[in-house]
Image (cartoon, rainbow, N blue to C red; front, side):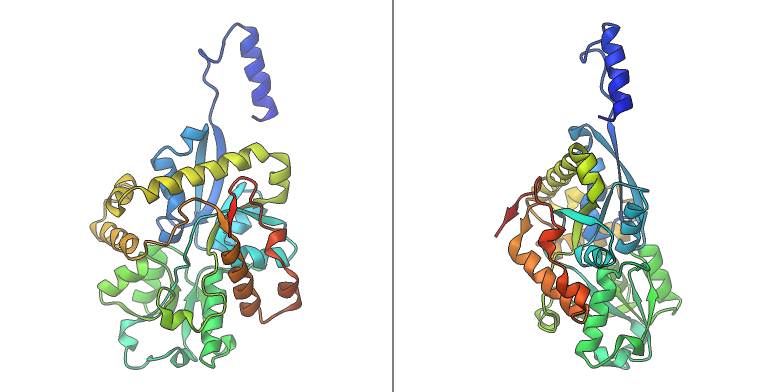
Length: 339
């Protein structure tokens, strides 16, 4: 516990108050991630709802953002001590000299959908047809390119379109941001997220041009089974507060285990979603992607290798990308690792 809290606790013991009569206060753990209720990051929305944080003597304080790069910015600016963002985005941050480390996986399978406004059906039939159009991606920063943007640029190149031949626009990572940009015609397409993509398609507002759960899309991508959302912190937090890092990992692993043993309906129930359309979209997406989340919160050596391949490919084999090794920034002390 922090030094000041230790002093207070010792003073209370001197007064004759024991742990039976004085409850130790919950440790505040501040975390930033895209949302709310973006399906790739949903376990962190679920954690406080099922009491996974309190079970570990902590209280999560959540700061939602419009993109993983922004969440990493909050981490590195010390607004929070933990973030969840795409591991390729954290790798981008690392190549810029920021000492971010990954401490546990959240996802098992990456999930992105390139969706196009419905009124462009017949005009946009393949990725190459996006040349000259506006494509929304998750919000990047000056020092970190989001996984969404890396993937969009890679898919464009796979069909002969240079990233400079489209206009990339920050589209955020929430329903209000993505839906409003499409409905107002600000963007022609978005490299988007669930459950928002399926909800927009069901409403007849978009069609899917590329889906990372579809082998026809993944065959275009080297390292297609990369690790997307991961729990990250700063190296200094790792050194100065290892107990809090261990606690945060236990909270995540407890939540992942709970979600693996409950139905999509039960997961959405604990979130107390009142909007009928959002509830339906969340349940549909959770059913559609049963491999989305890590079941045990352990890193996979095979997946980390895929992630290195994906990052180097999306970075155009830049020297800084080639030099980066995930073993230098992945700390599996508390999460564990499997083949």
